[in-house]
Length: 311
Image (cartoon, rainbow, N blue to C red; front, top):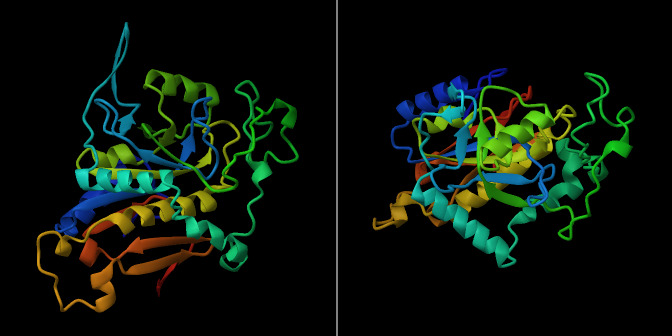
């Protein structure tokens, strides 16, 4: 697993980490970019906090658009440059997981661990704190939480989900750039101009300029003035859980037209061996890269100490 240096974020930092990782481990074939992002709520896409957004190839768009790179003309903006789409292997894995979800097969045992989540420092999620404010209502004061300060009469009404508290997986276009978006009007303007992107983040375009990569983001805010870090740990855990789902349906190279290496431990021949990385309130599950030839680039910019433990 590769991770951005503490306190570093943005396209350049992500590009450096991914390029160095690829140079150090040339046998790696598949890349997952896993982390958090800002959601774009709209009537046809009921995106909520902790939902997952997966980059989806749509037309000429490879799943991610760098929205702040291009040319400005009198008649409008022209986006230039090219980002590589995810590999067919990763896109097939996304399709398998999506089909399993639609068939009613839930791979969300991870969520059901919430009963004992306090042991890991997560605490209980209070879902009524997932509040979406109107575009006209600006956060009342910098560095203070919305709860107890922002007027809830300026919120947009949303119906409870029939699926309960399970996060929903969305597939669509992700906007990537070097700017932190915390303005709902600007968010909606950019989204409308980019064929309806559903998520904002700050690393993918730097990686996908040279590497075929699948981007997985869990929503931690709505890219508006009410943006805060309260949901980042929960969203990071959700993104990691979905990444585990993707890895669980990937076929190890040793089983694709090649004899099985009997020198491998039995548990590794049957599937993926898992290593848990615990960052105080954050638990991320990653695959051992030797067998799967997969690397996860984790872009959760949180100041947590961490240690490796055997799963």
